[in-house]
Image (cartoon, helix red, strand yellow):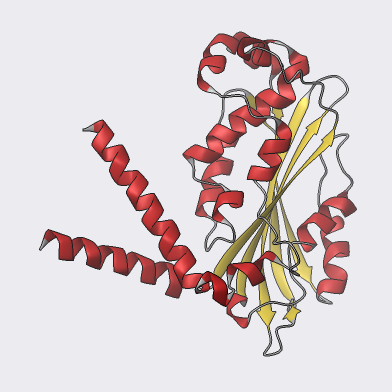
Length: 280
């Protein structure tokens, strides 16, 4: 009976993932500025020396992404934004990250894809010394395919993570996202209806003082991860030779979207059971 009950729970969870609201998430991570990090530095020097703080920041964010299960490269195209919201909340609450005033910009989108980039650029606030607003806007828009399966009509969360390394070794980060409705017609063409959307930004400055003070503790807890590796981890991959990663994600050779979510759920359930056994 326990086995049957467990199977019913698993089946129910998979159905919920597949047949729930049509919500999707795509993420892109970008680095600007300079990285003075010594990639051969010992762990304690990673946090103690300000020149290494781009790598130190990447190492902390990588662990936070693991704890919150926000792993766009591993998970591919996801069905919800809960992991990103958890990742953002934990990062903004981390003791070494000085949270700046966040912004929420409301936009009334008109003119579809052609005007989307222009409209985002009018409100996006770049990090000091970081990429320009029009570049950030382009990074948002390029995550939307020009054509895909009709299955992907729905509410999309577009995530843009920017990390900036200054000449003075100061590091700043912005965790931004926007939700918008995307429609796909019978021919597979993607359109963006007129709508009201909100772009939420979550900027913070990395405290060199706290990193240096806690260098011994941090070096024992945060494995070294360089910024290039982190950007790769936090970016939803596109498939080679495909217009967009969705084509590969939903291809018949991959046994459909449903199998993807079923495999992902089963893997995490297995990991959870192993964790429980270790705790016992």
